[in-house]
Amino acid sequence: MSEPGDVPPDILDRLRAICRGLPEAYEEPAWIGVRWRIRKRTVAHVYVPDVQRYPEYAAHVVDGEPPTVMTFRVPADDLAGLTSSGFPFFRALWGDNVAAVILGDHTDWTEIAELVTDSYCAMAPKFLAARMTE
Image (cartoon, rainbow, N blue to C red; front, side):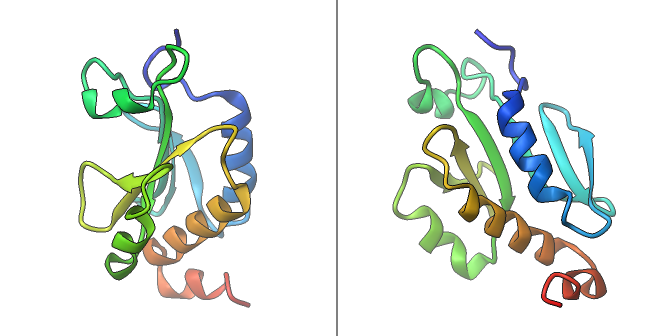
């Protein structure tokens, strides 16, 4: 069993490839897992939760392994639409504009790239966000 916070290397590699294209974004260790930030604002945070401490993640355990979760920002108006259909998306346990997704073999990485980019645009200064549409 992996330790809480240990993110599978293949998932980190995919997220790193996405986040490399975000102007001035940087990666850093988070309190658990890894996060990408612009200035001091978190764009995306990926981690493996401790399902004993946070039992709400227990429903997503597969073959005894806890899920890999990524949280990101979504415009409040879009949050319900994204999370209403259920797996792999759900509302994060905090924030009024934070969604979470379970990452794994089922993941549509094109969709994740779009969601991370949108999260970046929501968190970045306007002049940096504008560079994403140039």
